[in-house]
Image (tube, rainbow, N blue to C red):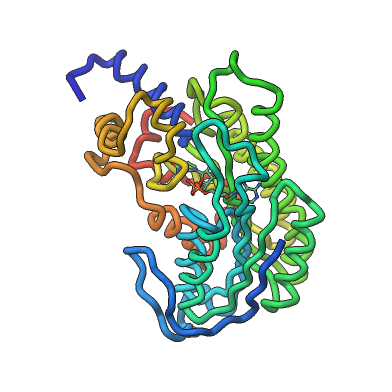
Length: 330
Ligand SMILES: NC(=O)c1ccc[n+]([C@@H]2O[C@H](COP(=O)([O-])OP(=O)(O)OC[C@H]3O[C@@H](n4cnc5c(N)ncnc54)[C@H](O)[C@@H]3O)[C@@H](O)[C@H]2O)c1
């Protein structure tokens, strides 16, 4: 990036991160224990046998948006650390408007992710479910409890984005993003809470964004929905603490996933390649020329929040954004 004065950098930062979103059914495979047969992400190594010494041994996780990206990484990291995992995803682009340069996962991506998680030898349940459908989510939570033996950790990660200016928004675009990112997070918690209470406690982890920390032009409803996620996190933490349930959120910066690398994202940033994306964002990061964050790093934050080490933390939002968050006040 060329030399920029401070105010110009601020403008680009806003436009860029706005753009980022920052972005700124049900197949069933209960308690699978097959050996490794599927592709893994580069950061992961198979653990042939779950050990009781692992931090999530004996726990059951319920992860939405698990077909790829951050959700898949969380499912892999949780399984590698001993948890059985219910992996939920819509996995059907025909069921969600994808006309703005971003599409949700397809079933092939979902199957590949499930196969990758199965290699860790913990239970895996594949559930093709729409987080917008409360009844379907309640059924998924019940199946998780019945077929994996409980429900301890909920990750409301599924997300959707349509890039447009506030003025150019339409009721349908606005509704779609709110429906997935706000109602979907509510539905996920609502479905799981009865089972967390039965276990005597649990963890809820919501995927917010740096887009939930400030205003970003061009993000459509996304920014508003991620602020809502942080608000829901605080309210639920207030109410659920009495049941030994912690509720926290993660606010990622730009993460190397299909959402951030999508055509719509790049168009909104005024770039046409990953290299240009990274070149635009690198100067905004106190941690230097790191490019986008790998999904594994966000998954490690989720692992911390799910682990015993975080049992006294609730109602907070952890920024994992290469330090970009140091530029805003709240
Ligand atoms: N990638 C980033 O830069 C970034 C930054 C901050 C926050 N986030 C958030 O992280 C979360 C994961 O995003 P990602 O980057 O991994 O994107 P992604 O597109 O790779 O994954 C999103 C997943 O959610 C699924 N999904 C969408 N709508 C759904 C629905 N109605 N029901 C069930 N599943 C649905 C998609 O099929 C997809 O598999 C999202 O909430 C996103 O807003 C991403």
